[in-house]
Image 1 (tube, rainbow, N blue to C red):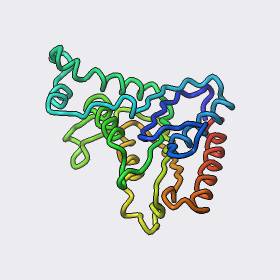
Image 2: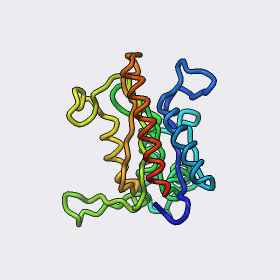
Image 3: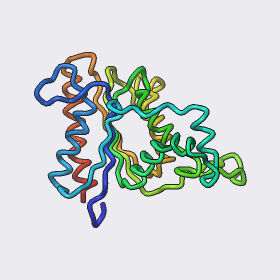
Image 4: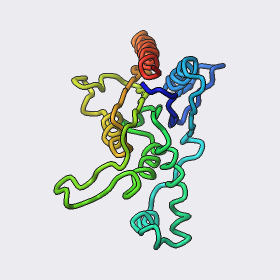
Length: 224
């Protein structure tokens, strides 16, 4: 993929933890991300990972003061406004420095966890990750970043959320993330998911095994 080892921003978003010493109530999305990271480091041991567990330090929700600060030119911001944007600046710096975004997330109520939406709202920011120009007509927004890859690892309790699946129209997780990732400079998205979690049957086991096999193939592909 690259001559030097890429830098990876790893985001975990599940309210559940991942503990290898037990299985009950473990996060499957975190488990998939752990599999990816372990296999990646076996091939690229010098890779730098930037890690954020969004449930351990949930990003603040944006509010009116945040919006006012974001739309105020840098030189005109007050100390209070700079403080309001401090977390956003940190998260954006992490994003900018990364070549690959490794994002693990469960499907909650057919969409993304609130902590992940809060992260997107903090990092998708005018004049930082996207520009706005009405001269572009009906599509005035353009990303400021480019060249990034996203590895999206998901888990869901039900099944059939893929294109043409029986629950395609209920999937507000993958499509939403892919839409937003454009404004992070993401040009390639690789989505791998585990389904049937709530059914606790052989279909779930098969889905999880297929997801882990797909991760192995993706690691091999991206790490070279």
